[in-house]
Length: 93
Image 1 (cartoon, helix red, strand yellow):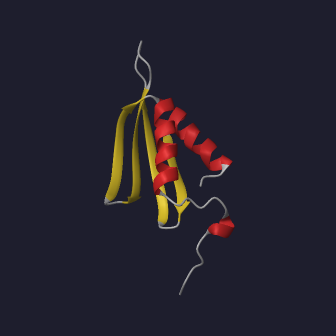
Image 2 (cartoon, rainbow, N blue to C red):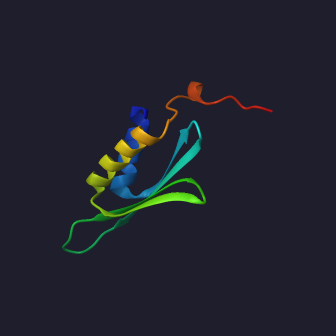
């Protein structure tokens, strides 16, 4: 479950574009958002969610608000986000 700081960072990425990396139990989850600003039309956003370089999901042509809602729900349902440093798995040698 994402904490408030992570939720705000996701919302900011959806509004302004950029990359967000969330720690999960299976490794880092990278979310890249690209905004397409068009004259006389509402802004649209594309996102790429990746668990590894070879495994990713692309979401194209969403409104930033709808994109945030979908990503937040998707992350909540499919990933175990670590919201605190205490939740991080210990390093094993």
